[in-house]
Each structure stands twice: as structure tokens, then as C-alpha cells.
Image (cartoon, rainbow, N blue to C red):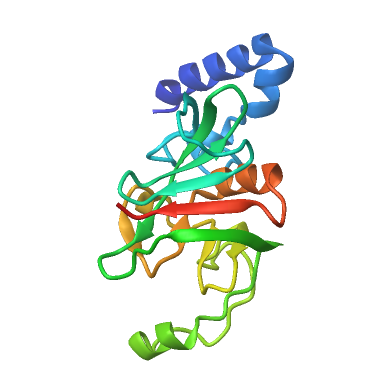
Length: 192
């Protein structure tokens, strides 16, 4: 049994040593055996972030949420956009409009709004930020609404309609978007 695992582990160690700098920083043998920092990195996002051509009439820096596509676009220069997969509101909870990001938080606390508590009295009244918090690693608050663009500790919900109106992203994607936008960024929500 030991011989069965020895060859693959030796091959991984050799490849890691040969790869040098960048790959060595990204690769941790614990990732394939369990417990390393990148264990869930590959395959964790069912809708990978990508740069696409974008023909909307929005200024660079605008966020466009397309609820029917379950995609969020950060408009770039030269007719391009970064496209992210998102989870959207389930039936009866989707909405549209134009708002601004009014606040940004890293590892935000979560206090369910009274409307949500009325539907789900089993929810905690307050939850400190952290890996178990449903808002994930980052949150961007949208105007005076109850809604946010936020991370999720349930990456399998990306591309699904499961939320109470917020837009969920993987923690990796929401951290990337958070670093690219500022308070005051326009957010256009298209609910077709």
C-alpha cells in the first residue's frame, strides 16, 4: 500500500521542485492529500471568471448584473468586461434598478433583516464575520436597499436562483471584484 502512494507523491515533489517560483508558490502537496490552502481552489467555482467582449452602453467601471444570465459584468475599456458567475434571488425575490455601492466591508458581520427573520425565525439575530458567515469574505452594500453583492460559503449555489435578493459570488470572485471597485460605483441590475 505504501508503495502505491510513494510513486505519485515522489512525482509531485519532483514536479514541484522543477516548476520553480510561481508554480511552487501555488502548489502545496497537502492540496491533493487534503488540508492544504488550495484544496478547494480548482473546481470550486462552477462559473469561472473571464474577460469577454461587452457591447453595453455603460461607462467603464460600471457593474451590470444580469439576473436572467446569472452573471455580473464589470465593464472595462475597449468594449470588454470581466464576467463573474453569481447566485441570484429565487422566484419572488429578483429585482432590478440602478444603485450605487454605498459601503464595502471585509469579512462583514451579518444581521438578517426583519423581513427575512419573519420568514425564517430560526436564523441567528446576528453573526460575526468569518468563514461560516453567509456573507463570505467581502460585501458591497447597494444604496438604501437591503441587498448586497457578497461572497458565499456555498460556492455550489453560484449560477443558481437561491438567495433572498442578494447577489452571491465565490469568495475568490467577490474579493477580486471588491479590489476593483470603490464606494460610489454604479450598479445596474437587469431583471429580464
